[in-house]
Length: 286
Image (cartoon, rainbow, N blue to C red; front, side, top):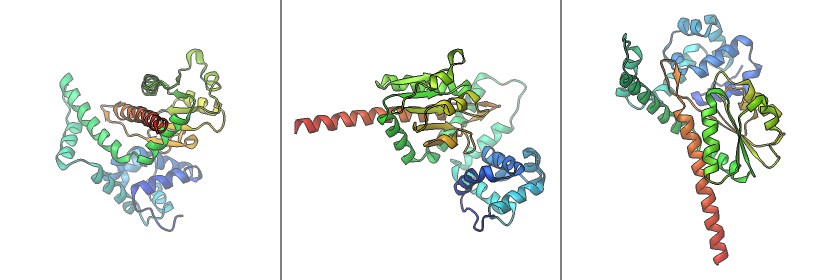
């Protein structure tokens, strides 16, 4: 048991990630729920959270105790504080709440557009708060130093992976999409050389093909991961990991934030390349 409880939700999430494998099956179940549905944890009762997490209420208390809290309510305060901190404004909270509770027999395309736009605005605001600047710089450096970059992402993640490959090629970088044509994703992974880099994108439910690709790649290859949870199976392999919380409207999850992150890394690399070229030119002219 941890003697001193985490003081922020970020610290709690980091500790959950570190200790995840050592937790019991029930506590791991709670851990997944805590990280995937923080809003429900912030304002739910013990009974409701336990029901939704499919565990007895006593398991929530045991989980809180395992991380140094005297009770579940003490741990819940971290979720509430973070949620208030991340919400852009009171008006926005009210508007989102109204939209989530509002149901009609017929929903027009314009109403759907408004819902998706509003939810994505919140997700994008969350992205800029959550992404670490040093992680962005490290990701750019990994791709810059690599002879070639290989990108893997299946199912829903394929959209982000294919865009990444497209963007890198348009800034004259050697980029190869591991698309698994003919089920040959393992074979494609073996073409990654020791001087290359790998980018892996995967969201729940995590594609086994992506995990198998990472296992098949040569050891020591730097890996950049974009995923949706600290407990994603990809995080254990990552040199740099970006956890992106996408907007979800009517059970449809967006990709806006992940694509924005991919674009920032790719264009950041373009500026890095241009800067290095300019520096080299200045040295030659001296």
